Image 1 (tube, one colour):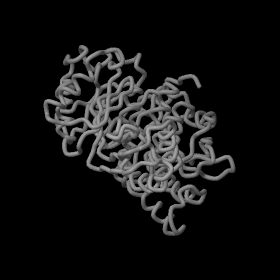
Image 2 (cartoon, one colour):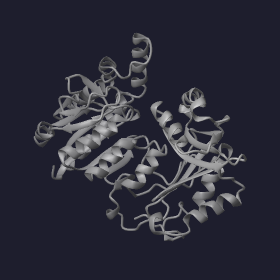
Image 3 (cartoon, rainbow, N blue to C red):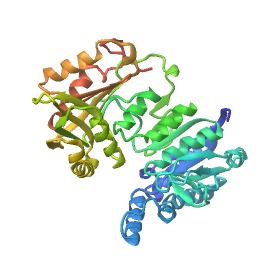
Length: 428
């Protein structure tokens, strides 16, 4: 749909709607946008902690994990419906025309993957017509309708995805994601108090940050924004409405006036490493290992293969999420005879630290500066992986904060307009 300069999608997460007092503040944010002449669609999450409570109930009722069933979705989707109804009532009490919509009423159609559904289509005409009359549409996030007419849910973080998808379907000029922080920072401010809020960041950079564990936005929502070119603004719902609130705009790279070599340093602590020793050095062994792990739904990140002391064998090491470690080890034990490795070593005392920046693609010396900075602090690098705009290293977990602080300083991320490897990184 073509962009409609008056339509705006606002999304409020669980902490933003945690109680009636906060829902009242949300209503004030909505009113402020109405007074600016916006035609508003609001997407809401369940109240903080409610989804976990509902998931626990389904597991007790079903005798275990039932997250891939229609009835699981029927239960856990109710959290968002409660919030949507409450916000609509608060808005109505304030004299604002508002109506709550469930996902299926908003025309949000998904596939049949209950518990982790993918949005296939949104018919935005009915919803668009409603908001064009001045009515506020309050849509339950996280949910849609499957091909067989059952409620489906999009998986954790699905309300962000709902909001961006609705913005695309409505041709909204922007999607505002309200959360408990006022934007995206150059790194975790709890580690580096001098971390700087970024005014703008590219979709590509935000995708890398989200995939590495930055919790500001859900990866699927950023991908949708990039695909449909929907600018996403991140700002705090915990502040009262302002004319020019602190925020970060996530947009296409062409709308960023100056490309930064490095924009952010992102730590990820929930990592583990597995090393398989003495793997026969013959064609097909790596394929066997990683096909087997893929069948067990284990996602692999960094992979290193090196020659073992025995000339006809190799050592293969790789990283994965710590939560997948026990499942991976169990599956590898079953595959030992097929793979032929002699020993397996698991290490949970590791973390991944990454630098991200669109300017890396055409700038030399960035990796050298990163590695030199870590070496000067006595931090040993175990594994390395790269993309066009990211360099990640695996290091001992006890050095995580030291590495983040050192890299943040080395690339001068706390100083607007500072220059370092590759030139200026001012964020306009």
